[in-house]
Image 1 (cartoon, helix red, strand yellow):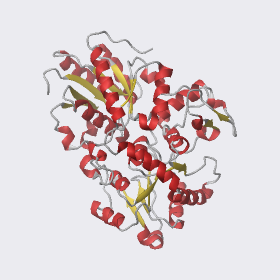
Image 2 (spheres, rainbow, N blue to C red):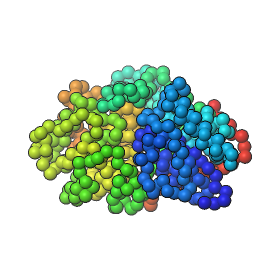
Image 3 (tube, rainbow, N blue to C red):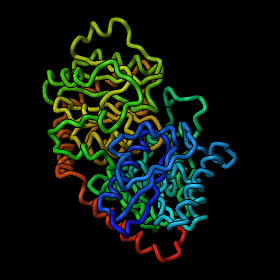
Image 4 (cartoon, rainbow, N blue to C red):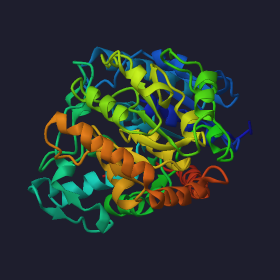
Length: 472
């Protein structure tokens, strides 16, 4: 550590889609030795961090009260205790030197006021991509929420292929979720007239940081910077260092992302199964840990995989309540592998036998697939996933929608899914386009993102002696 190393706080929200990017951001910030970082997280998330991360000499872990979901209200006792814990950490720092800044996951925006009490400027961090934020902002400003079925509306300043359609705004059930989950967690895009829910959460920030890169989302990054008139840094994708190895090598998830749940298959068994399949032949089907098909939709998905001729891996989430029927294993034989519980997603996506990914289009899953050259069959369920899918299908043209948004009854889903699987797995042009995108990452972490990190470092150091100005 250099004698002049300054401290940066990184504040993460709950969920792997927030925790993993925040930990990788810490790694990137301390890589030069010019900064030390303090990762602020609920204490119940500590077990999700790999030991190699915890023992870095430039990293400090600051634990606050445990929470299973982001606290939403000032009156929330959990938030109040978290706030007291954060103030205690900052009081200790103030006795030495105040942190240079705090990079705050916007879902933890309530912490801004505590940092400001200690004169610490705040950068708002989006763990998802710039296209989703740009589309939500543009849809709000252009009143796209008022469009009707059959209408198309282009957003000035954004690519024409990302024009808003009625299907983009349509809601659908979000599958198995806790009954006490905040309503905003179940939403689709904002309703007509609504401003994006993140807008008030970033107010007062002196800049914005996105978990993306210019190679994937250049026009959307520029749009956000222009519309909000603030510095914007694209510093991702914030994926493990092992991910950036040569594209023909596998990534062993368990070493870098401790699993939350058990799996009924060992790592060796999954690798052996994949090794026996032809190159690019396997469809990987997974929905992450927080959303998924409904109880009525899961059987239609399973039926589509049965009727398809393609080899597949299906990951069934813990708590989904779905179990394959007794005859499914006999019907699919060695063609399918059904994993109940945790699956090594990075390893599966990096294996040469994997040729497609049926995904909910969570941002981490989306960039993990693109970076490994795997086309996507998109089944978005909520929030940013809807615009992530649009980016994949309409702008990057490296996949298809699994369902058209107006497919009718649940019983019609199976036929649509079978058709979508076949289109994805047989489309050589989509495969070529995603392979071309993958080459952007062949030399490791994107150079444009390295430059953005350097720009951020220079910016925040220049603010050190000045009183920070809140973004209006």
